[in-house]
Image (cartoon, rainbow, N blue to C red; front, top):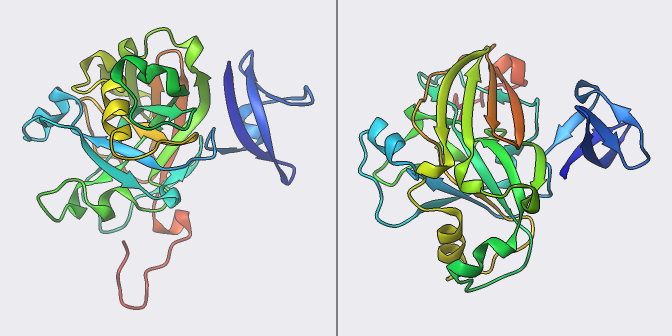
Length: 260
């Protein structure tokens, strides 16, 4: 089953997918453009993987990591399907990152790799934008690159784990204004889902709603204000995002002149 969350008529609703439409709990059906989309789960801790595809590491001229390169994302970064993401005026290169999002369904600690998939609630699609200009140090990516407001759309749906027989064999595709710019497969991950769960749970407790963003394959391209970016993962859905400039986002620089 595909589950989601929307804001509609002043309330938050848990919804499901029904023949291309959005179905409310009372049975009403909506077109997906008739509501405001929220992330499909109430997100807890977000773990994001850097350089988890060897072709992407090569694309950026980095050596593939020997252990998972993980960083955290704040809740302000996460937005829903059809949301707007800001490209700051000072950015010279901002790219999308189509990623498989793994949602944890059980509180767990010290999970063995053989048992790891049993703690997964389901899967979603993420688009974790990065601004290359903002990289500041050898540890990539840094806070400013990956924790900007609204920089990580997630959704539209959470697809139940039981409905995804092999999450390590899913096609990933990105389209910018209808043109395909990125294609890959989750089979090319350096560290697979079970390995990541074993690794993370070895030193901290994972909880329902925690999300693991598993990295992106090669095929990055600069995006500009006005672009419509679609990130799609086989069997999970197509996440649509709109790039806007500062004015379109309702942003004004601070008196000190910083934009962030």
